[in-house]
Amino acid sequence: MAVKLSDSGAKLEEVLDLLLLLGEARASEPDDSWKARLPRWLLDRFARESTPEENETWLNRWREAPQAQKAEMVNARGWELGEWLYWFQRDNEMWAIVGARIEDQNLIVDIEQADDPVPTSVLRWTCEIAGLRIKSFNRVS
Image 1: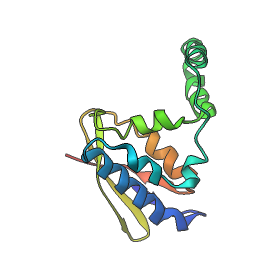
Image 2: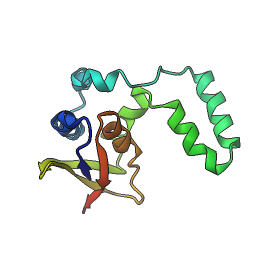
Image 3: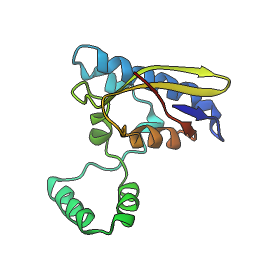
Image 4: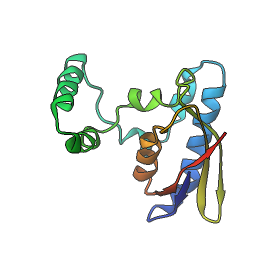
């Protein structure tokens, strides 16, 4: 994934550190202590955790919505911390971050994928709230 600098270019290195942390956490022994190392700018952007009843109500509305409105509903709802973390857990074998680096003021993230398409919305959202813009995704085998 190539991420271009934007107004918040200072966050480039923070996002790099975050993605490396998430990649390492997935490869390490099960230990949730790394969650406490998530940056405040990220933690402050998560939506409030929903109750099971709220989730069911929202999901029913989403299922009944026209296809064109579904993405808008997902964006408006926001990411809850647990939902976001799910995509970086070891038991999610769809994809993994296998490397990240900065080249020519771009953040390059190597993604190993087991399925297509890769669920990139979690990475896109993380970069966007940091003020970075994704140029493309770099998939490695």
